[in-house]
Length: 333
View 1: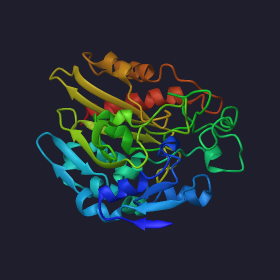
View 2: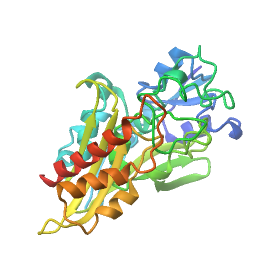
View 3: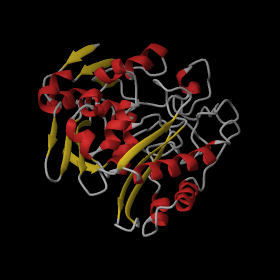
């Protein structure tokens, strides 16, 4: 069934009329914006929905970019290309523009929305192929075929013995690094919370976010600061065009005149179960000079505690080097 709504309130009312115990990921009513992810999964039969609620009619209210002295506010229906090409984003928040430019093909960027991009689901082949019975994300309690299977692209940070899928998005790394806040509208009204709290952990892989059934992301707010202009995104992938990261790093820096790091934000990507912030690595580097050796040690701290499963044994070293390179790249901005 297909439904089109004209207001956020209508969308929430329609989608909230389901069993709350199912959680938003497995709800039979799903929102449809760009459709670049959900339609893909519906075709593969690894994600089903009884009804799609088209929210593109909300673009007049939730499809713009607003710049203030405090930061930048994106409506959740802003298209990826719209944000990437915005002059203030490119000048004052380059890490956001870079993640979007490297996120997908131009055709995908023309359709996909910021809100939908944050909620894209795993690229795990065992999740996408329903011929595999073992997938705790698809069928809780069935097992994880990726553990002991082909797992070169799977996560090494934040994993559990239930799921090692890697969060595939690029944009979330930049927004997590910049302390973005999410604004939502649900049946209990408006709420805001840090983006880093949006995605849940691997212990219950069938539940992917803290959103309630029918809760709609309406906006994202990125606070401004001296670190946002010196920010960048490094993405390592198998091919240059339209490919997911095997390792990436969004970093933002503020440096004193003598090169000492006064503030640093590090969000490794392609390596973690959910959008990740390397708090320990940031604490290590803050107050130190940004030298090649310190950057390398920061990368190793960022990947400390990584858990590998055979095919992805290379990921901790690759991730550490990616973080180090991104830091030195940002220092030159």
